[in-house]
Length: 237
Image (tube, rainbow, N blue to C red; front, side):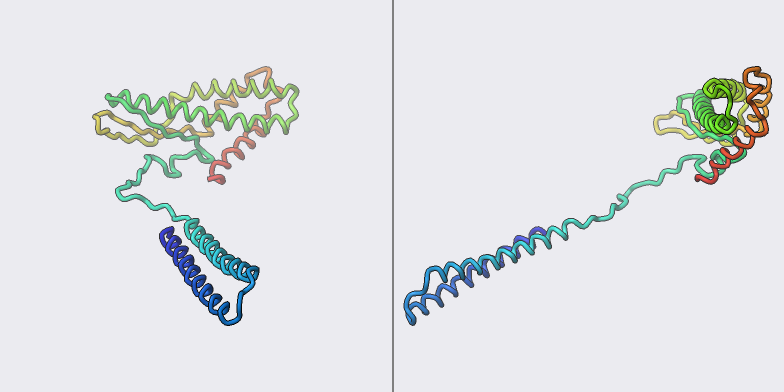
């Protein structure tokens, strides 16, 4: 495109030069027939001609710039390969009934790779549960107008964390895949889940025995808010 632009400008300048020569010849003939022409008139005409060709050059410059500014859509390079992550479907995501997590581990030994994958998945699952409990506790404290909000939230999170840590060793493995890497190492992907009802039952049992929380803890209302928060995992997909 830039080459076309240079060619167009050169053509415009050549045309201007040719026209300028013709104008000079005509003016010389007019001088012979009618005497001298006014110097101011020649300057004015010369200015008008050059202004016209300058405007033409500017117009072509903007046209070329407009062509260059058009973005080309990115294309997929030849040889690119689509990568599918194991357990990436909705069946392995947290929903209204179960907390779920997917993770992987790599080692030269299969048992070690699987152990790493399970540990990573448990850590991810625990973080997801803690985030949900934090949101539920904040909503509950707002609605119940508890005496000491900060203390209540802190105690709730501590107690729920204790329950989750106790239950992590008993999570259910719902997916397990093994891959051999080019260098010979083993990569294991696992998907695990923890049932919401089992978690809530354990939390209720522990919270109801806590003297500092018992007065402000309404098991029925807490469960309602918890269920509402869990449903968000499905509606926000």
